[in-house]
Length: 247
Ligand code: IPE
Ligand code: IPE
Ligand code: MG
Image (cartoon, rainbow, N blue to C red; front, side, top):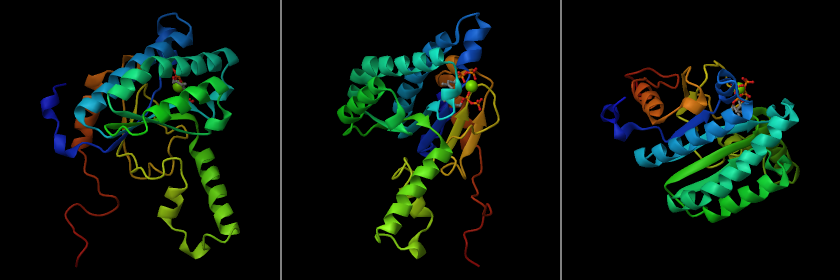
């Protein structure tokens, strides 16, 4: 799809992607699932680059869920190794290209090697401004809400927060994504029509775009197709199209 069709003035500020379909991509080729995860890293590289070039300021990618620990130990270990390898290999380029790496999820439960590479990448790129790349790792939307409510309860208990003052912004402020706008567009490759516990609070009004293309086959042209579709949508947020709220 040609990029001329895009209105550069109406790009989403925040794109979220569920990087799904790696296993099926490998199975189709008679390969072990980890080959699909490896191929998926190439898609991530290309999409990060495309976001920078197009001027999308925030990209959040679902890389490992709180439920993915249920998989065979060998796959989980392979994924954790891949994460370390990705960060080690890419950090130079990410830093040079202005990418600010962040991570969301229960990071404390990741293996030590992954935690230390993540901490390095986050520190090294902290002052970058071109693209915020949020890696969702050991992330679960419900776990995030549990953590947020615990944080909130502690503040109330300590007398620093009055219950009557809790509103939606207060809760947003306790999430891992605190300070970031909610995703405008969610892209889900590999065809599943579900959220799989991703950004439950933040996606209240996110536009959803699902494709049968598997993540390892996902390229810049598919991102452009999603953006084009997004730009044709009418976002009403519960209101009416041509009504400004006055009477
Ligand atoms: C997504 O691909 C990657 C992770 C969940 C870590 P899958 O591994 O879920 O691929 P499918 O859904 O089995 O094809
Ligand atoms: C969602 O994919 C998680 C990631 C892509 C990291 P899953 O493959 O785990 O989701 P389900 O099991 O199909 O819902
Ligand atoms: Mg899957």
